[in-house]
Amino acid sequence: MSTADNMVEIRQVSRAFDKTVAVNRANLTLAQGDFLTIVGPSGCGKTTLLRMIAGFDEPTEGHILIKGQNVESVPAYQRSIGMVFQKLALFPHMSAADNVAFPLRMRRFNPALIPELVEKYLDLVKLGHLANRRPHQLSGGQQQRVAIARALSFNPDLLLLDEPLSALDKKLREEMQLEFRRIQQELGVTTINVTHDQREALVMSDHMIVMDEGVIQQSNTPREIYSRPGNRFVAGFLGVTSMFKGSVVAIENGALSVELGTVTLLARGNEQLFSVGDVIDCALRAEQIALIDTEDSRYDNSVSGLVRQRIYEGDRMVYEVQVEDTGGSSVYVFDHDPGKNGEHDVGASVRLGWNAEVFYAFPVVEKRVL
Amino acid sequence: MQLIPSKKWVLGSLVAFSLITLSLPTIIIIGASFTSGEIIQFPPEGFSLRWYRQLWEMDDFRSAFVRTFQVSAICTLLAIPVGTLAALASVRYRMRFQRSIQVYLLLPFTIPLVVSGIAMMIFFGEIRILGQLWPVGVALCLINLPFMIWSVSSTVNGLDPELENAAHSCGAPPVQTFFAVTVPAVMPGIITGALLMFILAFNEFLVSLFLTDARTVTLPVQIYNSIRSVITPDLAAVSVVYILVALLAVWLLDRLVGLDIFLKSR
Image (cartoon, rainbow over all chains, first blue to last red; front, side, top):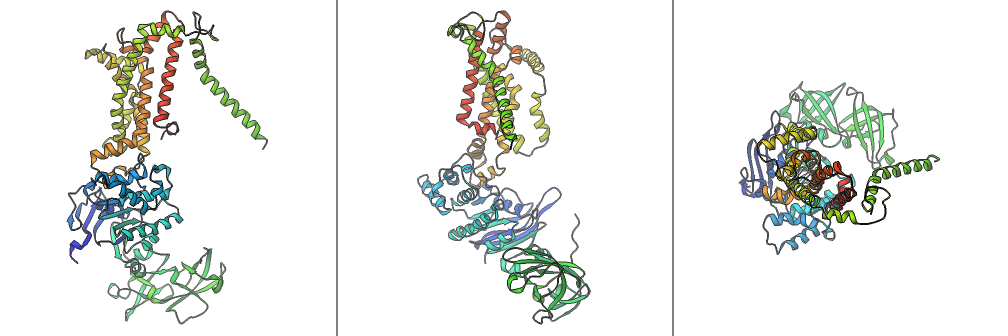
């Protein structure tokens, strides 16, 4: 694919503040019409990266290209980018319709066409009947919709979302996630969304980037990233993940034998990264663990443990199980059908089983001390 | 449960007491101004508008009233741009010595008015502008500016810090952003501050006393001068005029900004 087909291209972009590096040599390309979500804990650099794309901040190194054009010398107000801000930043003195019309007036659209476009976009976000309300007369969800309409009314090349859903309650947030996705697909607008909410990233995007400490950790489809985490951070960040410390005892035919506490288990990992004797972390997702009765040959690995805690969550039962075999560490286990499988009381001893292909081994990297 | 009636009673009497003590002087002065007698007294002796007619016929009071208006207008017109920009800058923009500048802008509060008055009298005398009317307006703006800055700052604090960025992303260049987005968004604070500045300047006495002479005397100073000679009910009538101006300001505030917003000092 040539660079002109990419709506956004980021090449080796870094942003350093006085003593910290907020973004460290980030690279990404985004095709026309794609929905990308950048996810990571707060302070991981995702917002800084977004603000550089919007033009509110400048890279200290590297280049940002939009539609193949280097945008370094283009101020924010000359970029064709719509943005929905974290606290929305609606203009408080303007009605919903005037908020939506503002970018059209500023970008010198034909005044005769503006009312029609305002109506079209307010209808798109299902707010046509509230056009004359001021922002403070609208509910949180309605304000969201005004902000979306304002960001889209001038048909921008790119739509940026800076955690706009983080302030909403869970139900409204999930509703708005689907709404964003519907509008984005309806208009086919290239979108970059920034969030710390992994569920939002998984639900909304075609493409996903996980960031930590200013570095892009992994970039792929949500499904691929969730099922094949590229490193320890990504494995721990997504899903409910338990970590085991251990060492490699053997490598054969693509499978690793790892020693965790008193047991030797099978794990999966990139052979090239390991040699026998290496210290490793093994990651295991709660939904991949089965509660089994006795030795069960369907599972590559099995250990026994004690139920420490039992949490009823309606659609599932969550157990915290202390695993003696692996040195006393705790793991979380989901049981999605406690009615059929039977409940285990706190203090009961249980047996856990899982397969090698969902047991990811990662080399232990010494965390940088800042 | 038994507490509630007594609580109601205690609260009710506290409110009534406050209302009475706050409004009693006003009621007395309004009543006294309508007297037909020769001295200020309450309840008034008969009813007449003679002291209002007298007031209207007294040239020095009338011209003092006009001058007070001019001084207040100068003060307000000056305070609007200065106070608004100072408030925006000290709250919104990161700059060196931000804290120090914020404190510096509030300094007029810490200086006794007598000291400000003497200092400005000497300074204005040195640069040969003492005796004109406009320096009084400038002086009143100076001593009351913190009110304007506070009023605008409280509105600025309530704004989304990304407001200007939002305007940029809508395609508005900096100058247009300022006039089409920033200024209208802080307008409630500007109006509140401007009315406050106007009323404060209208009522200001101490500093005006130092800076005015017989040709530039303002209403509060004029009242002070006349009570030193003889106290007649025309003073009560002047006070009622003052009350009306204040009421007008409150009414304007309510119409333009909404009193609920002002009281919540948003």
